[in-house]
Length: 243
Image (cartoon, rainbow, N blue to C red):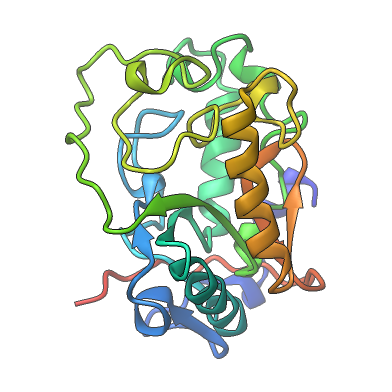
């Protein structure tokens, strides 16, 4: 979708003030055992700032959340679970990403795009019309059960590249997939030959579990999956924290 369309959202995309649109659900209500680490509600993302419309809750179309609950049940037999980084994304957040990428400033968190200029992140990594804004896409990874603890994120720390060794990256209690989440680098391509056999095997475990329940992976991002036929309507309602 052209970015100019995002600048003037039609009434169908207007913010919903109370509750969720019909057919949407909080993942916590459907699958409370899935870990949530909603990065765009924090400074721990490539822009270095929380993005508009976000809160620390995963919201999805209800059928997508139910499919994730089935994935979680399968993985539990292997003492594994899921951890979400991004779910439904308000359209205004995608617009904020685009404005940040094209503003000409040298800001942002370089460890997320160690070999790229931020101006080209919309060429293959970030979409102007995101499936996240339809409620059918999710970014996630695997965690072991019981879920291990992780050191708190420190926005002032000099963490290493997202494509570097796991113990040098920002803290995360997930299984090492060869890169961190939102790592704009060739190593993040699902079938990258630059990762270890063990890391490749974990990507295959995640991919197989998701495929069994109707999800399709995006080949440039091992963490990104979409569910079923992609609807045309995108949404821009703000996520309200669940109490």
